[in-house]
Amino acid sequence: MRILLATDAWEPQVNGVVRTLARTVAECRAMGHTVDVVSPDQFKTVPMPTYPEIRLAVGAYDPIKERFKAFEPEAIHIATEGPVGLAVRRVCLDWKLPFTTSYHTRFPEYIAARFPVPVSASYAYWRWFHQPSGRVMVATPTMRDELLRRGFRNISPWSRGVDTELFHPDLRDAASPRVMEGLARPIFVNVGRVAPEKNIDAFLALDLPGTKVVVGDGPSREALQLKHPEVVFVGSKFGVELAAYYAQADVSVFPSLTDTFGLVILEAMATGTPVAAFPAPGPIDLIPGSGAGVVDADLRKACLDCLTLDRAAVRRYAEGFSWRACAEEFILNLQPYPEPEKTRFWRRLRRLARLRRRAAQPPTPVDPSGS
Image 1 (cartoon, one colour):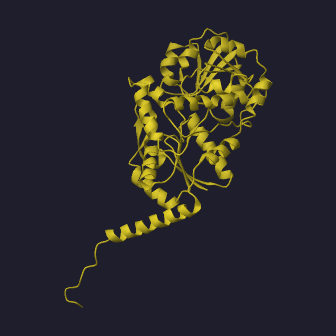
Image 2 (tube, rainbow, N blue to C red):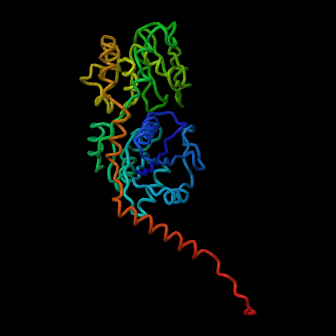
Image 3 (cartoon, rainbow, N blue to C red):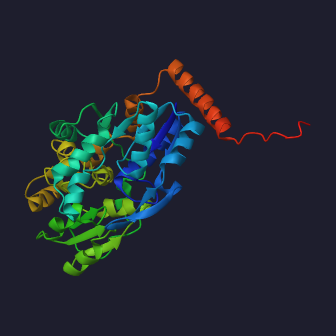
């Protein structure tokens, strides 16, 4: 299929949504599909308020219409609710094209963490955005149930994967880069955006033995470093170095209450490192009964209990998640036009475009001499 994927979250942003979409696109292409990604870097952008490293597209609607005509997508997926997503949604509604959406981020809660905006008001917008979608893809049963309670409909599952070759227990061996060298054990690591909605302060305030390490960057980093000078902040890490931070930690701590899944949970588990978390969406779908982590309202207790878990069992659990399965589920959720209607639609649209171009051309001047 020719799949048009619209997203306001794309490289060089570093977050779970971007990793999910990038890996899904790569797997879809490997399966033989053609994917055209519409993302903010293709347009003029402005910084997002309170989060300047995230850029928002401006004036995307007309260029996106031309992208539709040139690409002639057979399926359309809108991954985010920002300006790019809005523009593609508008095109689909104007042209009566079916499309699907996904719910990656609990933005109403994120907004409430930064501005005095009621969560209910934000959800009204999100409900409006997803209402025409043929399927709203969500990562976990908990998010499905929550969105159903909030009036969303047409919800379908779309799970996540992990790169078990990159994130591997072998990176704990002596031959690997010693990223935790000299730190007192046990080592508790948090990986992700250093931002208010991630609730990192709840982790940093815990009375734990050993060392706390924060891997990542974001708007809250400077303030948290000043507040917790005993914590090791190492900034953003990527590839093998990131995987080594997971593998050489004793526990990965996931204090977020607003994520819908938490890819970092699977990445830590793939290296054999158990995960401690609050009983929130994401962790409660992945961790209970897995033997790969502990969820508890007492996060300190969850951290200490994780120290007793079998790292080999943690790794085995993570091996059950693959990016290929994630992409296959994504493809099954798409709602492409049936072949005859699709062909007729794009042929009609091309004909209308030609007629409009001709109508816009100035008339040929008449020679008054008649010659």
